[in-house]
Structure formats: C-alpha cells, structure tokens
Amino acid sequence: MDSIPSVVITGVGVVSPIGIGQEAYWEALRQQRSGVGRLASAGALNLPLSIGAAIPAFDPKQYVQPRKALKVMSREIQTGFAAAGLAMEHAALTPGQIAPERLGVVFGSEMLYCEPDEMVAVYHRCMEQGRFHFERWGRVFQAEMYPLWMLMYLPNMTACHVGIAHDSRR
Image (cartoon, rainbow, N blue to C red; front, side):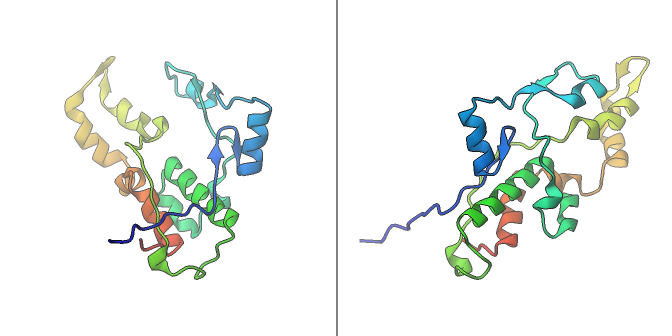
C-alpha cells in the first residue's frame, strides 16, 4: 500500500482587520471587536459604498523582503505574504531548517481586484460628457496602467512569492 503524505501545520499567521498576529487577533475576538467600519478611502473616491473591513495598521514594509518585491504585490498578496512569514515565525522555522522538498505552500484565492484609485484615471479618460465610452478602455488602459499591473493581481502570485522567500519546493 502506498504511503499517504502527511500534512503538518506548525504555525499560524494572521493579518486581519481586527489584528495582525495571533495575540492581537485573539484579543480582538475576546473583546468582540469588529473589523468592519466606514472606509476612509470611499469618500475620497466618491464610491457608492462606504462600509468594509480594511487593515489600516498593516505596513507591508515591515513584512516584505526584499522590498523591491512590493512593486509587483497587490495589497492582498502583501497580506498573504505577511501571514506566511508570521506563520513561519510562530512555528520557529528558520531558513534551511527543513529540506526545501519537504516544505510546501498551499494557497487558495479567487480573483484579486485592484484598488479603485488605480482605475480612476483610466475611467475618467473613457468618459466624455457624462457618458462612458467602452471602446476606449483597452487603449487607455494600456497607456495609463503600470506595466507590471497584471503580476500584481494574479491569484497564484501569493504562493509564488511565499515559496520563493521560504525556499519551499513542494
């Protein structure tokens, strides 16, 4: 009989609207504190919604190394990367401690959507006299958007960045 591979979860990393790190998260749960509230950016962008669950205390520069990787990481990828780093710390795993072939990354995601403010200029350039011109979108999008924009929003990039950073090959 073939042996069944084992999966062992040795650490937990939390980056959420109610806390970053296990202790802050657990304390917020104990206090029954919600992470849902008014989004400060909604008013500035004139969005029709204003309620959400942001992570205002999250500073990706504290968690993402090398820093140049931030150029190709959306906010979602940054938080996933940070959570993986916190899980590695919690597990007390250091680089090289585990053979790379025995360390794996499993990450599930749907679409990653860009921040609304990234599309404002494109949207406005497609507007004329209060009417949106769909036929302009492709041309304007290519001219206005950051050239590596697509890399920032591919759902598999979180696992990719984490695997590279922690030399995980499984």
